[in-house]
Length: 420
Ligand SMILES: *Cc1c(COP(=O)(O)O)cnc(C)c1O
Image (tube, rainbow, N blue to C red; front, top):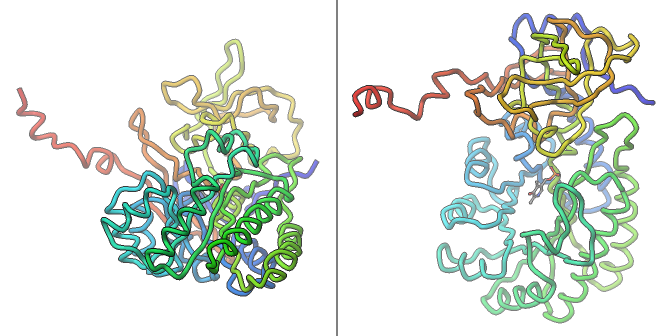
């Protein structure tokens, strides 16, 4: 079994905790950027290749800036995410706007920023035109329906609320062409946290096939194929990461056979991955408050489901390290819990761990995506700080922890006091 490693030793973590109270999420800059470079290198054969980082995974301006400087774009799906991109200084076609059930004001903002607009529904062509006018480039999201199996997070494509059917795509591009558009993209995303490398090659095949058919029938040219996100990460020791070089090679072969051979090159390959970009490089650090023994053993932390919802929401596995006890026998069965008044507020159920004591430091792995960002304030829990571990060992606070003033900023206590 491969042991999951930490980017800091016990002494370093204790030093960090001396300056920053637990709980916090901490991101490993070097590992994140090394991986980003690998992604870019894997697809260097494709002129114009771009990964649009899906910022819902970890919408932190510092992380965005680092990735943007590496050459990534940003994938947004809401007003708040568009505003974040704007504040970081990202504009134009470095922003992909992949939304659904979209309010007109979000399209306005996306248009104002010059983002690439990726429509989720054929009716939105006219909705967009009516509210904002049409841009010169549009992309549509394809839902392949029964062609492709889904998984637990995203479900089966036929049950999925996203995207156009195949017929709607033909109709949609035809309509867009008739309305004078000249630039086209296509998108699909049917996986989430998928670890099978071949899955992404098959996705490319489905999309290239469509491009060939649509380009021929409608005599239009596609600029890009956005293959979506959904690249999984090895949450468990025994999981193998997606092999991006294998994915790239498979896609390149198909590109030669289908795109180049049909005179449809150049076609830019895009991804909009979130999880695979930051997920493995974030860690939730907590301290043990209490050990409780009833019918089971419980280790109660100073963090809770409001800091990391995935275990409670999806039953997701997150690896746990009891810092300094890595080499002790993992023979004690624990539920590792938070303090919410919800019995599913557990980071792990029946997990074999070394013997845990109060004040032990606990690191929960792979929290760099959909970790802090899924946070919420139930029971009045405050969202934690986010820290960045830099290459030289420095630690920078890239978001402070919320305060009770933040929590109550939206209520007017004076009015409440005088209310009858
Ligand atoms: C969530 C999402 C992504 C990113 O998914 P990951 O699993 O984090 O890679 C990309 N595109 C869209 C439209 C999404 O909703």
